[in-house]
Length: 72
Image (tube, rainbow, N blue to C red; front, side):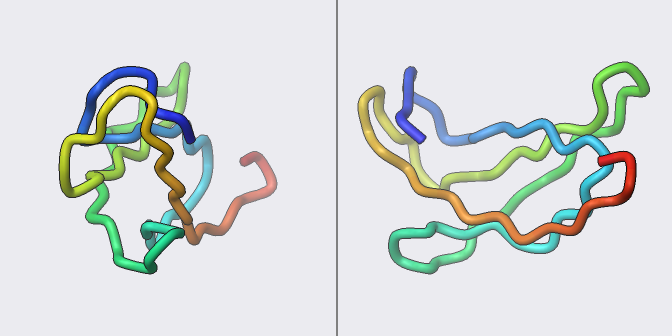
C-alpha cells in the first residue's frame, strides 16, 4: 500500500474474518495488531501497528493470514 499521510497504523475492514497473523511482507517481521469491537453495521476493523511512523509516499507491504466464513 502507498501511504497517503504519516501514520503508524494501517486499518482494514475484516467483516467475518478471523485474523491470525500480520507481517511485513518485505522482510518477514511480524506486526502487532488489534481488532476493534465489531459494529453490526460495518463489521470489525483490523488495526495493524506498523512499528514506526511511516511517511506519505512510502510503500508498505503487509501480509495478513486469515480465514473467512461463508458470510465474510
